[in-house]
Length: 307
Image 1 (cartoon, one colour):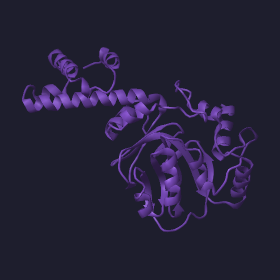
Image 2 (cartoon, rainbow, N blue to C red; image 1 turned 90 degrees about the vertical axis):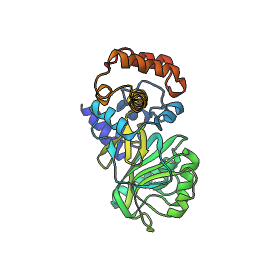
Image 3 (cartoon, one colour; image 1 turned 180 degrees about the vertical axis):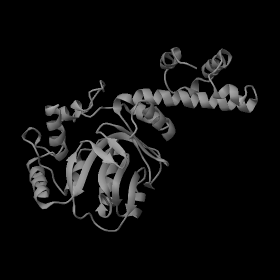
């Protein structure tokens, strides 16, 4: 327990302990806090979810993702109240950054460490330097909008060039016209202000952060839609997507049969009878284009299901 606490404290500050003197969490630190994930990882230690699964995630509703996570005991993964820039949905692998109100002595140590690590430019550009295609830059800016503008259109263009996605900022941005002109860029931000970033300091990259009422880990998946954003632990991502796809199929079939008058709402809304279950399975078989998971995955998913 003591060793784990040292990992956490050292990682969050990034420069506070002899065992973790860096701004960005090490691969070992990230792995320590995401042990449940057994798939591929990037060189930085973050779980690597495939592009194919990211594409499938786009079709998942916020309600389906939230409901699945709540059933798994993850009650603090959704946040609303955003100003949205560009088009939704936003999906990707999370790169985190944490900001705090500026304190001169700590800010000096951070900049000194950044120089040792050959980081260039202002600290608010450092998280952008680590982005790869499919990543989403997620920043805890403690809700600051005035003097809390983490990026303008120059950094926005750099973010999109590297990630082809966008950002989730519990903070502000500036240069709205310029950001909106970046084709494909999506932003979930707290507000827009013409001011520059001021009296803020970066404290860590790829560490656990708080976004409103949500706790976020590097390597989580983010799903952003009009309702808000949900952060999905990587080890649950594949099962969540399959579950959402199944529910979407079930709902589409149910709506169709209700419109046709074949079944009553009471029959569709309760546990399905063998007749409805078999009718559904035949409908899926007759409409293979509606199935996003493989036939083998579908068979495995439905094998022991309580209809």
